[in-house]
Amino acid sequence: MTTGNRTATDRLRRTVRGARAWARSVVPGQLGAPPDFLIIGGQRCGTTSLHHYLAAHPQVRPATGKELQYFSIHHGRGERWYRAHFPARPAGVRSFEASPYYLFHPSVPARVAAGLPQARCIALLRDPVERAYSHYLHTRSYGAEPLSFADAVDAEEQRLADALRDGPDSPTAHTALRNYSYLARGRYAEQLRRWYAVLPADRLLVLRSEDMYADPAGVYDRVLRFLDLDPFTPAAFAQHTRRTDRGPGELTDSLRTQLGDYFAPYNADLADLLGWPHTWSPRS
Image (spheres, rainbow, N blue to C red):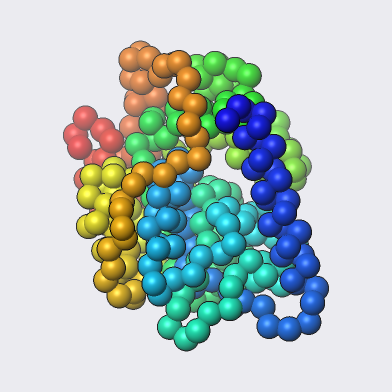
């Protein structure tokens, strides 16, 4: 599928899903209950795969689609619009949604704490260098990134500063924060601290993407225990991604070293915050 076709297809899918939710929300009657748990991110960290694994569980009913973005982009549409994305379900069956932008956007933690006071949240974190490059390829595959990877990294600070002049919830800010936050999204500790400020630590499960890739069954079992779901094994633990165009290799050895040095203090801060080993560093 070409970039233009992929962009148009995704836009149409989101438009149809949102329109159906609007239609359900304005009709009097029973809407689906709010979700019991969220996959909050991070982007390009395996959230699509985890979404598939959890959607396969017999005690789980997912939302109508991935990335509803209610607590970030679409919060103004109201709770009825949000609930219209969730199916009615019998007692003992859980529901969830996955929007990787939630981990990163500064307005989301307080909104989730207020709107879903009992919900549990799951975050997947990946080597920030690899995540940044995967994010770049993803943005470019949608035709939203004209710069080389090295130039995009150099331009990021100014791009985000310009976009945030009117605050983090303007359309311009959302566009830049979603597309051009290659380095900012890899500073995980500062994002998690926003969540810990409003959410009890036992309601937030933080995992390494590399652990899920290496041992999907073991990590999946840990997730099920966190969510109080019965043991279950999906038919397959395939890796899922919405991007297929890898493009030329712009993550050179020198740029990888430069970015590794940039992220080293942030990775150390994350390790101290979570009691992890010094992940994604020469000491890991």
